Length: 417
Ligand code: AMP
Ligand code: GLY
Figure 1 (tube, rainbow, N blue to C red):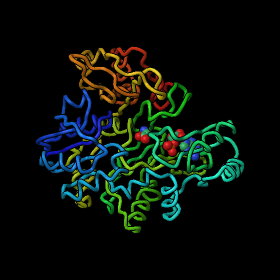
Figure 2 (figure 1 turned 90 degrees about the vertical axis):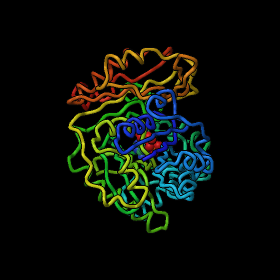
Figure 3 (figure 1 turned 135 degrees about the vertical axis):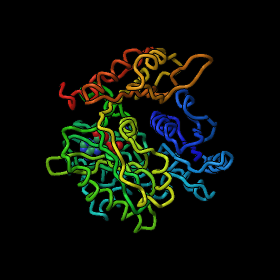
């Protein structure tokens, strides 16, 4: 099977790594990719937001499957264009991707499907904003309605800051604050059948101790030793299957990866958000634990034959990933800095620990930073404490001027904090 992956972050590197190890995959391409993905896949330049260009590239390659990684191409209709060209594609239509692309649409689907989520108001005027902030009180949760790469959400005790963020958005969702730990649970679906993956936890704040601004995600781990063993079944029944059923009922079936961002509150499990694609960095740890080869599962989802798929098989191992970000991330990051130590990790820590690339590119003989999140250093071990130690050992070998990473990824879950 020839597979083309669209995107160029650490999530796509994790996907390409798994696909490159899959005996069913005879050729692997990634567009546009990055310096790390180039080691496991053939890179092709493409405007990932241009559906016709992606479809033409897929046809040119003779791809049997296209996997669309990031949300922006999905919301722009790239999966629709590939599907229209008769090529199987893993990823939802633009209409179904509104589950991620519009917080208001997601709330509407959840209300119709009876999915538990935070109570919320959609506001478009300053009067509505003030009434909603007043109704819920602090801490305030204010979300830009559109796509914002995890940075459109402000959670604050400060009324003036909440109001300022709300007024800077055209359309804003203001909602009830959800207390309790967060869990990311992914499911692969063909629009009818839903196959959950293993849960992971993401660290959204920039700094240790969950301080600092929200980011795209600074690290992740799986499994969650503290979670109720029935969590996956519960979320399947209360969230994932009803959401997939509701989207099908509306005539906009969702096929691809349905990501449920959950809060485990004292009053039960609630959906914080949906995404329409694999999470980053959670994918790095979830795929590190998946034993079942990936390509056929994704192809069955693309073809509507997921019911034929035997149950997924998981490793007993735990996995941890630590994101190394550029100077000033999540603000405007500094780029173009050389990255050193990659060969040391490959020589000394592989295969248990390895570096997945996010924002990197090759410049002459060097690999340099090219984005906010630069690397996602991933490791597996017999338990979280061991996986974490291996990940941080590898992190310590990497040198990137001005870079930052959290030092507390998975610490509490490993019983260390
Ligand atoms: P989102 O983009 O909706 O996932 O929001 C980003 C982050 O903001 C989440 O991962 C949470 O940490 C936080 N957040 C979002 N909604 C809420 C909420 N209703 N209550 C508490 N925290 C929230
Ligand atoms: N890790 C959060 C996300 O992928 O949106």
